[in-house]
Amino acid sequence: MLSRAYADEICAVGRAAGLDRVGVASAAPFTDTRVVLERRKAEGLAGSMQFTYRNPARSTEPDRALAGAAALVVGARRYDREVPPPPRRGRVPARVARYAAGDHYGELRRGLDVVAARLEADGWSARVVIDDNALVDRAAAHRAALGWFGKNANILVPGIGSWVVLGSVLTTAPLPPADEPVADGCGSCRRCLDGCPTGAIIEPGVVDARRCLAWLVQAEGVFPDEHRVALGNRLYGCDDCQEVCPPSRRADPTTTANTPTPTIESEAWVDVVEVLAADDDALLDRFGRWYIPKREPRYLRRNALVVLGNTASATNPDVRDALTRALGCGDALVAAHAVWAARRLDADDLVATALADGGLDGTDPMVRAELDRAIAARGGS
Image 1 (cartoon, rainbow, N blue to C red):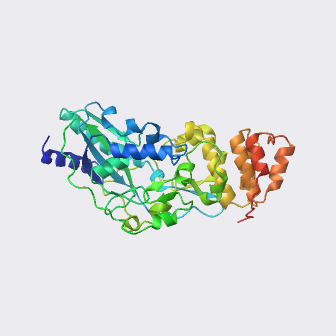
Image 2 (spheres, rainbow, N blue to C red):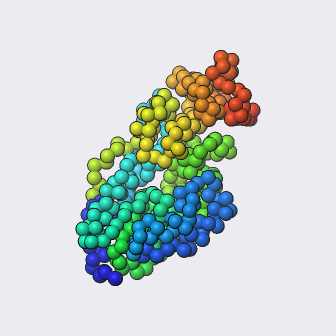
Image 3 (cartoon, rainbow, N blue to C red):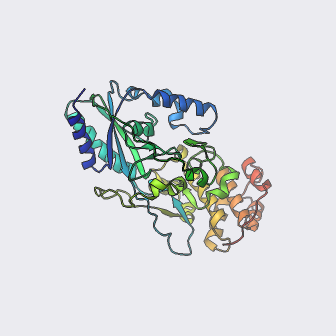
């Protein structure tokens, strides 16, 4: 085992590189976490989510990602929890979760790369793992004493809350691990459970992915009808369980003093009319850092149409043009959600026209399901 002083020095390297919290954990298998993953997968709570559910054994045994791994240097980098006001009137703004509004994972990686480079310069092997199914990052952060598991299943970092992205450096360096875990700070609070718009947090620390908006915007296929209205104006991600959490609400709203210049401009709000007008290449250029199923921008259009149906006005010519294009685009998934959005906005005339001119295939099963669905129109807004 290397000295505590050396481990502290490695952590200091990470903080100097822009990480807000750095800790060390053993690279021993996360046996208990594997049991939890396998049980929840068997219960169906993972829904279609893969990630660490795809192969729980691989995700919970660090030495599969780096042979001879002895320790994890775990870093947390905070991001700004403040939301700027929506853009000017006359547009159709959609919210983006704070973690996805800028290249926060890119900045996290740059900090961890510095840590890995130092370990390698000292003769040890190192591998950076971020947002990867090779490692259960929240369990690693908990083991490294960066925070406790909140009832919303996020890691809550003292003084910061859950407004962090997490990653690790796997290394063969036998660094001494953290001595004590961070004590639970949730107590009897259940605001995240009560504040989830779809009731996805079914018990403390347990999230049903089949109801979680943050996952549903990333999942393949048709957006579940029963959760479309709850999506509201969210294009990507959901921050509700963080926004109501007292430790996260009390956090200093500013980002780290070491924040480098972002490589991608923050986009807390996105105009869904622009999303629907853009071609595939433009959407991937702009949002390619997000997880998009199969790298198919049709899923961004699907989400945008649900937002349109929830928040737009059918009297807006730009909205009508966007719906008309989506109804006749030839992609059944997009067209089906355009049917829902148009009917929800009481713009059935657009659907009728698209059917009459042959641009909308009413025999397609997805489209037919939307045409047959009972929809409560919300009218103009």
